[in-house]
Image (cartoon, rainbow, N blue to C red; front, side, top):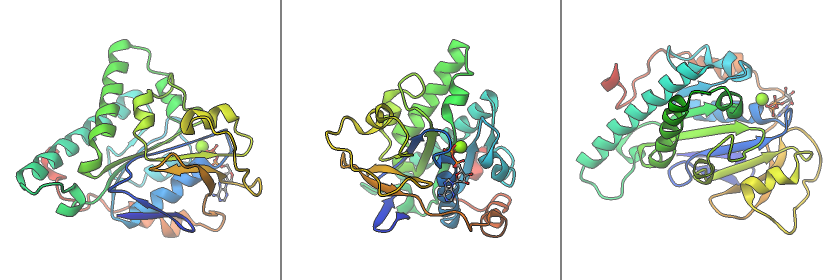
Length: 253
Ligand SMILES: Nc1ncnc2c1ncn2[C@@H]1O[C@H](COP(=O)(O)OP(=O)(O)O)[C@@H](O)[C@H]1O
Ligand SMILES: [Mg+2]
């Protein structure tokens, strides 16, 4: 299971689970998430969206089956609980297959992917302590155990500090992208660590920044140009399918 991120950069979902996209407002985070959403939809993935700012991803999420779109704490927790059930079911199947070292994809499962845009906008709303603990433990569990079960999370947030996102979760993301040449160096350092020499992107255009994928090496990132991408014709028809047939899906219905 692969996704082309840019020329010469392929994201291998089995070996490099989870992504985090950070950067200032307007740097192209949501656009990049929409591109990835399209690529995951082409892989016949089961897609979930959390969009607390009720923005671009929310618009697309309205075309998903019921229960796949969240904007507030309760619906977010429902989605996380649902994904955890899928994960546990898949893990049981993997164990009972008695084949060593395999993951969900080799058993024929499709990816399950959660797009979580502007995570901090929701996290800061959760004030009740027990709710926050439940929310964080679900998220951590999905991030830690998701890889072998074919479950992916793609986060976006402006500033990936520990208040917004627990460090363990951030560190589990194999794909790290920081967009926007005006994004403060402190933000870049939060996800990549300190670099003595920042390579400067060639130009300040939409979706330009830095990335690392599975290794500490940081390189220039240029998001695909989405100017002529028409979601109505290319993406929405892929989301529109009610309850596609996905293995391991029926057990919680
Ligand atoms: N990859 C891209 N291709 C084309 N236009 C883009 C791209 N990324 C960003 N833009 C333009 O910049 C605007 C802001 O991008 P957006 O993804 O909403 O930023 P963010 O989510 O980081 O606030 C978009 O509405 C779009 O016009
Ligand atoms: Mg956005």
